[in-house]
Length: 117
Image 1 (spheres, helix red, strand yellow):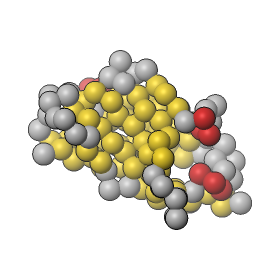
Image 2 (spheres, one colour):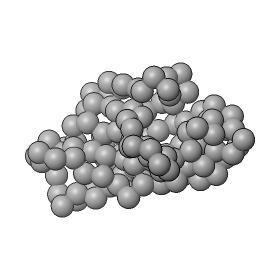
Image 3 (tube, helix red, strand yellow):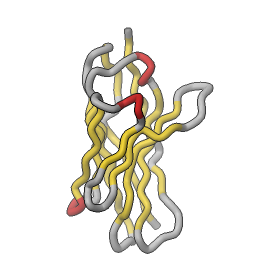
Image 4 (cartoon, one colour):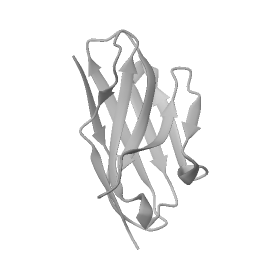
């Protein structure tokens, strides 16, 4: 069993910043890819950013230059630094991770990010 717990969401004004964290725990050897998705009301879940075990990042076009994903493998933690936030970034942000000894990814419960105009 693997658990992922997000933290760091909240309410911020447009142009502000937030830092999300996600800690993985449970029975696993190591985690390959970790990343963040988001889902706004009435919309499908979409990929925000992903980072490989060697810390190679990839971003959705709509966050390039504003968001930075990073990870600490020793702590089984992934971070998402979000700068220059826009109202359209408002969504529930979900962390995921795929342990190397599992064939499926695991998901966190989500953390709400609300950006006011």
